[in-house]
Structure formats: C-alpha cells, structure tokens
Length: 270
Image (cartoon, rainbow, N blue to C red; front, side, top):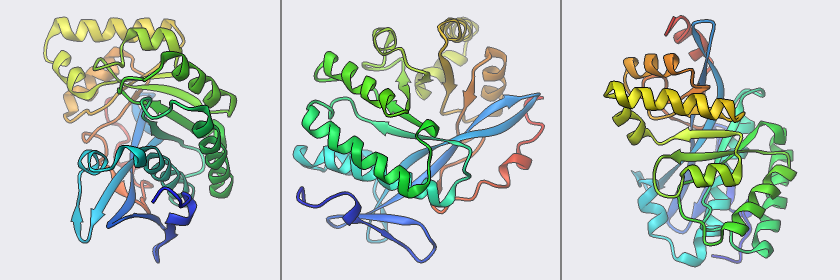
C-alpha cells in the first residue's frame, strides 16, 4: 500500500470525524486531555492524539496493530495516523489547547523520507486550521538508529515551529542522555515507573528532585498515567507542570467533547 498518499486514505464520517483505512483496518483517533494546576484547580491545557484501530467491530490494540505491519509500511502508517489525529483535532477540539502527537525515532532515518513527511504535515495543519505553535511532537522511547539523525530531525521539527517532548522518560532510551542531547521543551514521565516511585517516600522525593532539576533547565514536566486521586495530589505537591491519566479523563473517540471537564474537575486538588 506504499503507493498511496496519507490524505487519500483519510475520509470524513457522518458525525464529522475523520477515519483512515489501512488494509482491513479502520483507524480512528481518540484524544486524552492534559491538565495544569491553576489556583488550586485543574484546567485542560492540551490533548494527546491516540490511535484506535478496528477490524470490523473489533477493537485492536495499537501495539498489536503496529507489530503486525511489515517493516516497510510502518513509516507511512505512523505518518497517516499522526495526520489523522491533526485533522480530527482541528475538527473537534478547541482552538487554544495544545495537540500532542507521537514520533517513533527509530523510523526517522532518511532525510529523503523526513522532508516530504514534514511538508505533508504542514499542509494538514493548514487544512485543519491548527497553528504549528500548538503542536507538541513526542519522541517516543524507542531507540534511534542514528543519534545524529535524531538530533537533525528534532531540529527540523523546531524549524517548522513545533515544540518537542521526550515521552516515557525513565524507560528504554528515554533517559537523561536523550534529555541532554535533545533539550526538549517537555518531558513526560513513564506511567508505570512514575506510579512505582510514588508508592514510597524515597521514590516521591526522587520525583520531586527530578521535577526541580528539569524546571531549572527550563523544561516542563508531565506526570502521565495517573489512576488514583492520591497520585494527582502527589503530582501537585511535586510542582509538575501538567498531569494526565484516567483519574482525570479517559481517552474519547473523535469527535470528542471535553467541554464539561472545566467544570467537572474545578476545585479538585485545592
């Protein structure tokens, strides 16, 4: 299917949302809000685009879907799903929140592939009515095939006006070396690692110290995967920049409506 372009595979549904077709799979966007603490309250600051593949009426896990793809298709499918999320964000989300989208660093290995992908992404943003400054590009935890190429790619993202986040800090290759090398705008802590550290005072103290260190470097921090209200309270005490997780809001399929969340969570964590 490599001969088709991203936009040829994206269609609009009757409810206004966009879907993409890849073989026997129907690809949909879901969005999960990120919140900031503001005067003892929580306010939505952005949304992360998440893939939800379907085969007929059956939901397929995103990891299972991607692992089933031939190696030569993975780059195109990742671009397709990212552009799908951006089109749905422009259609269904508010026009002020940031939009977080993922980039697998193991796939960006060739300038001849990267440049056209970024050009298409700019075209999608223009069509969706999204300012590039609202876009946060999350570099996921996979190992880069070339560190110099990853550095070049991140610089290309910045030149296009995007901000950069390192995702899943604390696991695999999302380590301090990557932070010091890429100097991201945002660091998202790995959910499982984060929750394990929160369970002890020494672990929480370490989290607090890491937040202080990143803040001193001019880097915003995100605690993701928060599932319990007490974890949200720990995050607030840590001074983290943003929080995300089921304790606050679950992902919702596009067209997602999060208009009630400003009131629903007002006063939480005060």
